[in-house]
Image (cartoon, rainbow, N blue to C red; front, side, top):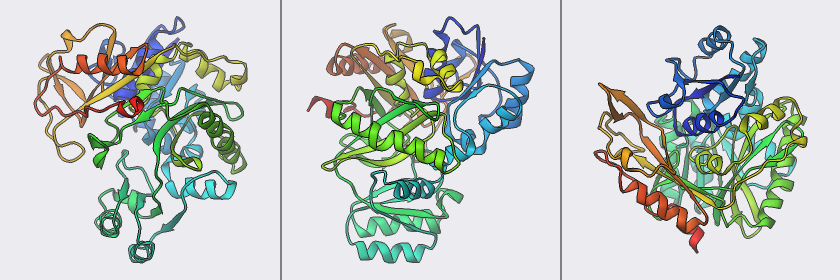
Length: 420
């Protein structure tokens, strides 16, 4: 079969890598792809949000299956457009993907159906939001309603920080239209865990629990990023937490979406805080997480094409999903200055010294005059699997030591919470 992967980051490189292992797959295309993906697939210069262009390409090339990586095209309705064209595509429709596209909608559905989450209030007026924050007089979280590339969630320890967040989002418009409304919610304490699940709208099968590292600096300091690294499985997700997440969060959410006329098929990502009262939802995403997809897909034994076909045909209940034993760790190498302004075009060296059993997934890379150079905020995701988390951490960081580009920044504590 011919497969098209939509997107051009580290998650999409991991998806291409995993899909290529299927004996069913004859040829893979990626739109737009990146320099690393180009070694595994034919990259085509069509933007991930150019939906009409992607439909036309899929028709022209007689693509048998399209897999969507990023949230942008999902919330814009790429699945609806492909379905209307009679083309097989993996991912939720626009109405279903709005669980990620609107944090207000997600919170309202959770409140309506009793899905555990932080207490919250919604505001479309900056003054009212500020008055509410002053009244709270405690740490809180301020979230832009719409998509903001993983950076629209601001954890505020003081009233002043929260007021500044409202000013930035609603008045200065740092996230554009995504900030026309904000959610202000209570600050939850505990450890975060990401549980991604395959669902065909009826059956829900969770993947291995992962832990992302959102803040840019060690010790969870600094501003939020798209993710500085992840590992799986995360020990904070005990069998009890895992079962509770499935029975009280994932299954009820899929049922709630169906009841709301938003039937959900694809990957549902639940970002959870493991609190003293059990897991509570921080956010839902409508796709594979990035960088969680990298360690999770490395540990997936089952043919991903078979899982996707079971989802699309409504036969997921018949599918057994197998995982390899051990653990995997992904360390993101980022451009200096990220998630703020950064420069591109720096040569990348040392990839030839990375051991062959360590995967380096490209996120923001390009080829210029035959040289591999930086082309994004998150540049590479160095991902290693081993028998234990400590061994996987050691293996990943030993590979990181071999790589260099000017301004290269990475966290040195990915997976450290698991060692406690």
